Image: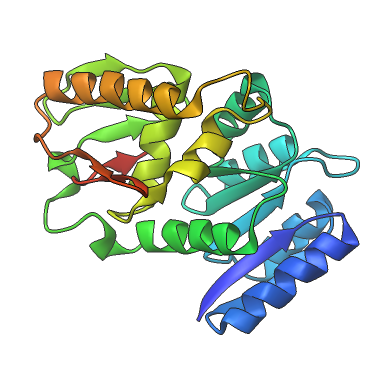
Length: 235
């Protein structure tokens, strides 16, 4: 079983998350309601992954995440937030979040994100290549770095898209999931989401091509979404 620590101050949501994860049969779950609870729980036992709410009392999830990454740099953090602006999402990435989920998130989406983080931390997650031969996505900088040292600057949305695909470990990420992540808070009439996503993928694919990635590095799965067809290390 995998070990997860849930930090959420809203009682009903915290209990729902705990019940769902326990019922899945693969998680050993502990739950706290604030940053102090996170510190105490980590002093007792470091979990495989932390599910962390942003809007905590006294101390924000952003501050808690900074402390966690300083004290336990290898611990994956899935951040859960109702704050949807690009500035808020970027603050989440910069403080050390590995995944930024928007409320209201589906329980299945939360569990899939946690599972991807745990698998990412396992030695087999990268594949047969050595880590030195695998390109690196530097999330906070929105920068892609090849093993040769060549770097490519990404836009915020390009970085978020590539990060979401990398966390899926070759599985398909549904177009609707990407829409909610990349254009949260925007209504259907404001943006043509299908065309916007298509254009974003095309621009990112051009950058990958220019850095020597294989032709199938970014694949469309018609009627479903997109998947990443090559290994990528996340920092």
